[in-house]
Length: 200
Image (cartoon, rainbow, N blue to C red; front, side):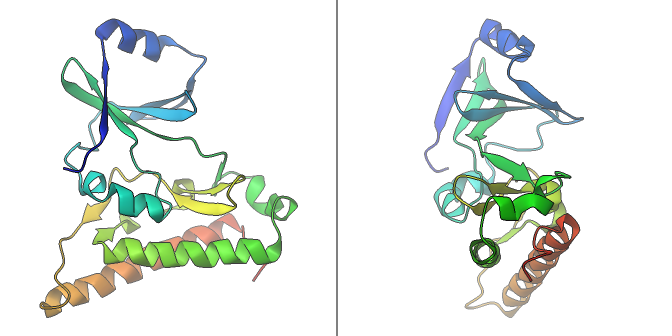
């Protein structure tokens, strides 16, 4: 496993953290998330993400491709309970208002360039062996006001395939299938959000 920082919480610190409503901003069936120290602390109730995930091994590469990867793993008394990720100053594409007002923040050309860059990044994510189509939707793509770039978030359900495309025809076919599925889900999310409605 590649090197990643570990945060050790005592039971008292953990309980205080979970009880601090000042930081809590989202709750669903699977996790609770808090904003603290300019990063998101995500605590998994059902352990969908594992510290042994290939996402950790490919952390540096994925970060370069605008995937909001884990910064640290959080442990409570030697038990894995979650991870931290960077805070993105923006919105996910399911947000009702911002996608339609995006041209107030960025030019048409810059938005289109960001869109093209995201497609290239998605292609490279596939090259690494990650099929992210199972959970690639408008809620899991964010646009950052500061960088004017798209980011891929929520990698808990990503599937990883170790592919040898140079020597194995079946692996090459699998790679093509992964890229196609990723691309199709990305385009669906973009169309659904209407973020490029006035650009293309």
